[in-house]
Length: 284
Ligand code: NDP
Image 1 (cartoon, helix red, strand yellow):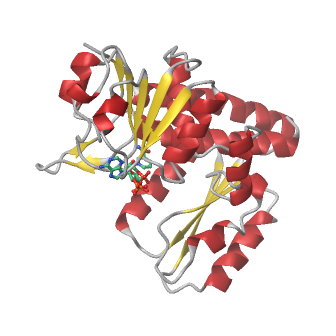
Image 2 (cartoon, helix red, strand yellow):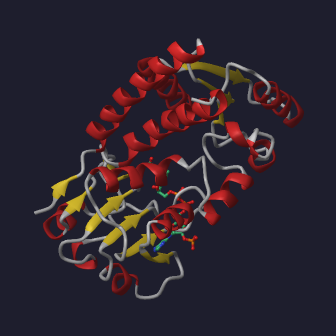
C-alpha cells in the first residue's frame, strides 16, 4: 500500500515558511513582496482562483492587488495595464488569469509581462531559461511537483521518469525539470503507442492529461512514485485525478491524492515565485 503524499500539509508548511520570509523582507526593505493578478471578464472558475490567490497572499503577508477588467476590454487596454504594473515599484509578480476572453490573444499579453515579474513563467524568455537549466522562474505546477518529490525524499537522479502529457504549462516543463535533476525522462502524449508499456517502466510517473482515472494499477510499476496532476470530475461529479487512485495505491510506494496532492502545491508555488522575485529585486 502506498504512502500518501500530503500536498495540502506540505503547502501549509511552505506557506508558513513564506510568511516568515515575508516578515524578514518587510524588516529589511520596508515593504512586503507584491503580487498583481489581472482578471478579465466574469468566468466563475477564474473568479474562484483569483479569490484564492488573494486569500493566500493575505495569509502569508504578501501584498496583493486584483485588477478586475470587463470582458470587453481591448488588447491595447490590457497591455497598457500590464505595462503600468511592470513599472509599479510595489509589484514583484504579475499574473494574467487564463483563459482570457476569446478576442484577446493570451500569448501577446503574456509577452508584455516584464520577464522578472512573470511569476507564472509563461513568457518565452522564461520558458527558454528553463530549457537551458538557468532559471529564476518556474511554472507553478511542475515546480510544485518537484518540491513534493524533494520534501518526500524521492531521489530523481538515474530514475526512469515518465511524464504523460506534453502541454506547455505542465508536461514539457515537468520533463525538463526532471531532466535537470538527472532523471532519464520519457514524455508520452496522445499519439504514444502502447502507453502502458512505457508507464510500467516508470520509477517516477507524472500524469497530466485531463482524463479521469485513465492510468490504472496494471499500468504502473510495483513500488513506483505516482504524481497525479489531473483534475477531473468522475461519473458522479466527484473531483478525481488522471490516475485510478484505488488500484494505483495498491502498487505504488508513494502517491498523490486528488484533491489534496498537486493542486495545493500549484497555489503555494505562485507565492514562492513572488517571494523569490521580490528577493531578487530587493537584493535580499
Ligand atoms: P492539456 O489539455 O493542455 O494537455 C493534455 C496532454 O495530455 C496533451 O499533451 C495530450 O497529448 C495528452 N493526452 C491526451 N490524451 C492522451 C492519452 N490518451 N494518452 C496520453 N496522453 C494524452 O492539459 P494540461 O497539461 O493543461 O492539464 C492536464 C491536466 O492537469 C488537466 O486535468 C488539468 O485540469 C490538470 N491541471 C492541474 C493543475 C493542478 O494544479 N493540479 C494545474 C494545471 C493543470 P497531445 O499533446 O498529443 O494532444
